[in-house]
Length: 120
Image (cartoon, rainbow, N blue to C red; front, top):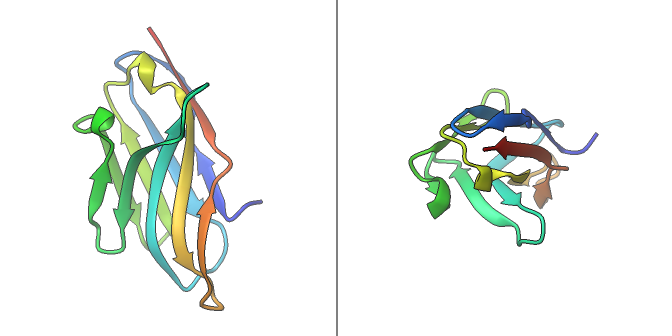
């Protein structure tokens, strides 16, 4: 099992909603930020949303107003609530985290990805 464990990917119709979650599976010292990126076939991996240690969020332009990122620091988990989904949201969604390990090493970790498919 990798450091970041993602879940929630599914197939939905346009206009529907999904919630993705990503949990850090091992003990760590501290999280700097967590976020989501996505990659559609034949395209580059793009920012969806990030949230830092202070709760400050940043969104990609294409998802503003439709997606919401949040964190549960007690569970070392980040969520992505996706509403009003469009076919162009179809992609593999990757969780990313910047964090300090128990040994105080700084790591940037990626999850394995979870597929989101939106049909018209």
